[in-house]
Picture (cartoon, rainbow, N blue to C red):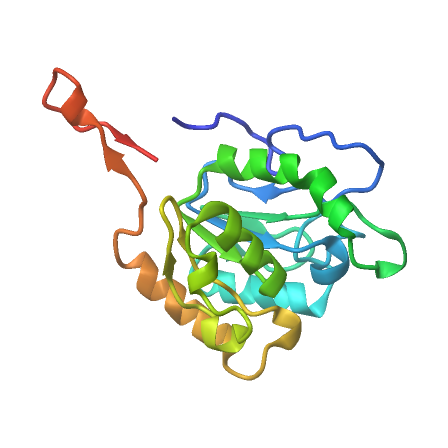
Length: 212
């Protein structure tokens, strides 16, 4: 099933309480979903677009641009087959970290959007986002060591419904991290990375019926 919308920003019309938010941005039918933490960590408070307005955010954009998922990196990047969003989309005062209660308050919006996009590949950015994605959307949380994100950076983790490619927080990148991520994604994109099942065997006709 395809999402039909011409909106790049907040394509599903999420309306959490409060005024300032950095909504999900990109292709509503993307195969690749980049999941950040919150605007204070990865940017967008001024622009309204995730992973913009900070050196670290643009650094990540350039790695995505190397494989064609982003063009024109900057404050309003063009995206292709890619969606960018945050676990906690609300802009907070004084650049503080969200509390556990604040994360929980917005979890329903993040979860609904992630499941609406139904990407095949999730790219959680940073340790907190990686632990959340592995814990909520795979059965691998206890089997993956997230204490060393440098070692986990760009590696493939297979879940029951999603392929997860953890990304080291771009604020911590050293020389080569951007290139390493781009190379991992390029190798992945050369293969069939789709996470689908053929339910055609349950139908009367000979055609396959692929579903996520």
